Image 1 (cartoon, rainbow, N blue to C red):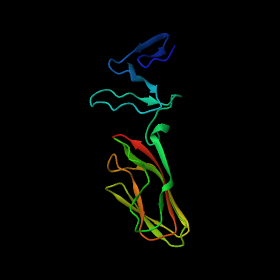
Image 2: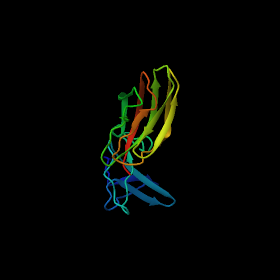
Image 3: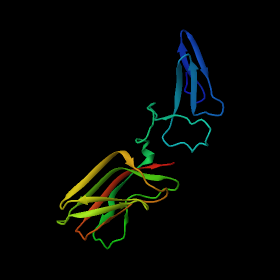
Image 4: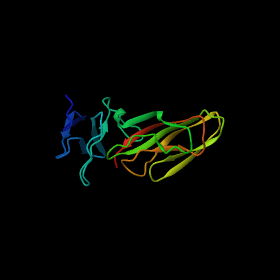
Length: 181
């Protein structure tokens, strides 16, 4: 049987059951005794936001694996590999480490701060509202993989970094997911 986002079928005791849910092409669910049968729509991008009270469809990748946060489709995951986030002096303004995306929160999943200076420093990471402080030893680095993303407080705001002392070079690298609330 060809895939249809409007109809899912399941053979049960020699008979086939199936039905669609009106107004919701992205999800099909069926009740059979104590079992609920569901189907998910394959997708490589997030669907449009839904209105409260309407059914939301399950989405999967093109192989049928259910998409859940904190992992997502490649289109949602972004990375900044240091270039614009190279810090030299405490007199510098904050440098962007993520890109502000309209309607999205840039939630950080991975953070690496590398200090090539012989001076220990502290790096401030700020999302426009909240500030996080990281001590970075001389000639060393700090790397954190967040199993629960470091949530941005406000949508449409880029994360920024700044060092508190003048140093030879500090590079801040992040990987982040654009989430829509």
